[in-house]
Length: 181
Length: 181
DNA sequence: GTCTATATTTGGATAGAC
DNA sequence: GTCTATCCAAATATAGAC
Image (tube, rainbow over all chains, first blue to last red; front, side, top):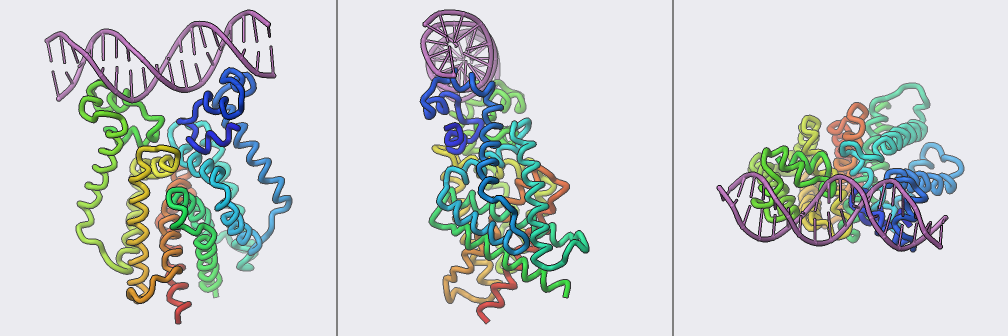
């Protein structure tokens, strides 16, 4: 599977040869199916999205969504491949002309609005105001998950991804609920 | 300068040719100086460390250290190159056999103990107990900075790195100060 | 549809001239 | 010390046989 190779090596350093070997076909065979390495990457990302969205049929709201994020981190501690895939590709995508740049830009945009909405719901702020505090907190929650994954990949024993994520969410919620009072 | 090329392309995708062009020498000239691409990367990372440590002669303690982290994020918003260098290389380093893997492992280890110490000092917990909460919070603070950088590189207008970092630190401190009471 | 063979380019690295 | 020239390996991609 191509996904495993991209996960192990990133995009730039992954060769079609290695991907082909792992899939049990020739390098030319891979290119016959996907027309280029870039399109192969796009297919891998699309496949992962479809697999993931099949699991969460309905997006939970408010606190439930935030707890769902913590659960995902807990599950991720058992899926090193997927964690590395996203960690490496998202950072790689910030380089000039990377083929996954648009993908990750959109991905983060969606994540930001989802998390911000969940935070607002959890605080019962409704949609009254587009509070800048909410956006800052949403960005921070997404960031902490991404950053923890890198630390965890390098030193799994020193990082509890779910616990640290939960701590940040709890702390931020306390602040958000406090201040407007 | 090699740093700029690694920052723009990451390690894998950066070619000695491009580095040489930017430095105004030939590709062979670069390899004469640094014996291999791997050693060149090591030199770049070492140079950056020396440059940075010249600035902070003495490590501040407690709250001052945490505020220093926020200041660094504020400064980083004006140094896209350095931000990208670390964001891309640290994620790349989690792949198999990456030459910067040991460097980042140590770097995070040091960061974790520095931030944990600062948190303990800020809460006046002294060194009484190696509280697991402190470590979770320290990991989270480091993580939020790393994650924010990736989001910021992809969408600078949507992310205030310093503000989000400050928010997380403040929120976590409030929690830490609360609970043991 | 998957293979073999090959074209084409590019990468890192070395040898030796100046 | 930096250059030119070159080597070798690896990568993406294409053409055409089966």
